[in-house]
Length: 203
Image 1 (cartoon, rainbow, N blue to C red):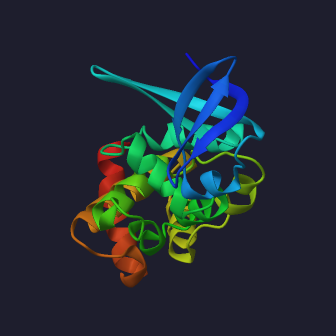
Image 2: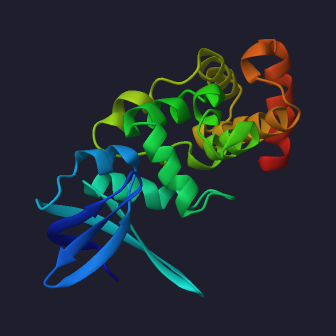
């Protein structure tokens, strides 16, 4: 596994660079932001993720370990491959992505090329609570949508554990998103009624 390259920049384009390491040139795919930060002939250290396919070996490069880790986490989402994951990191900072997932802001994520509304909803559902990178997660994770905080509080007061209430709400969010409905637009009493029904099957 090639996880880090340290060498000189031999060529640069908007989405890739060739890094020479001890006489060997490695072609590395990059975000346009990373590419723009490189200088021809200068030494660079890139944290890399090697994606192996039957017919190819592709290196993706990042300026820091955190970006590489987020890149690999994004690929755990159904339907998100390495090129889409790179596109996400090229369009959104880790902080903005963490905030969008924590606040379930579909609109921010769906603007990324290759994602769309369904993909954004799926990403939020599958990555909720997993964006634990740097100092970002601590400040974002506690800032949930008001409707979700109220619903969690109501379920806990009715005897649900925090884990069960979270599972019931996630199931509710998934169903509403499949119907094209934003939870924030639904009356709280209806949300609670639906969450309680989900909770019965979970508990």
